[in-house]
Structure formats: C-alpha cells, structure tokens
Length: 141
Image (cartoon, rainbow, N blue to C red):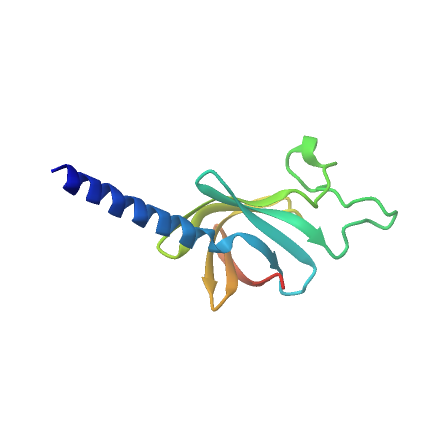
C-alpha cells in the first residue's frame, strides 16, 4: 500500500512540475512588433507578470524619463514607465496564460488579457468590453 501511495505522489509531482515548466516558457524578454518596447515576464508565486524594461524613447524632450501621466491613480503619474508592471495576474493552464490584466499607459486604462505562444511568437490578446485586439511579440534575440 505504501508503494502505491508513493507512486501516486511521484506521478502527481511529475505532472505538476511539467505544468510549471510549460508555463515558464513565457519567462524572459519579448520585443513588440515595432521594436520600440521590451517586456520581461517573471513569475511571482503561481502567477506571471510582465514588466516594461526598455523603450526606444524612454525619455521626454527635456531628457527626463517618461512617466505614467495618464494613470487613473494620481499618485502614480510621476512614476517612470520603464520598470512598471504592464501585465499582471496571469495563470497558466493548457497551453495558455489567462486571467491577466493589461495596463495601457497611453490610455491610462486596463483591459483583460491572455497569452499564447505560437511558433515561438507571443500572442498577447487584450479585450475591453466588446473590443479585442491581438499583438504579436518576438523573443528578444
């Protein structure tokens, strides 16, 4: 009986480890289609988040870092965009990261988002109300 229980524990552990490693495929840096931004995905506990780590034009005309001036939270409007979390709350299951929130700094709004990796490219789908859009990003070389 102990051998059966041990076998079950080992099988469940192996499956859990496989799902976790599959979900970790999103980790690392991704570049947008225009090559003007990079997001780095990291794991925080059992969730995945994407942080803006680079912008082609990270500074304003006066040479100061661009800030999150459209943020609905007035206390965050002076924070630099580079370093901010743009995607949060993603969980992984069945080849897809779902349940996330995408922050759009240009509009100062949030949208629901999900991710898939297709042929090595990251498909970021965002939706707000009846509107949805998918962007395709590439892994940083």
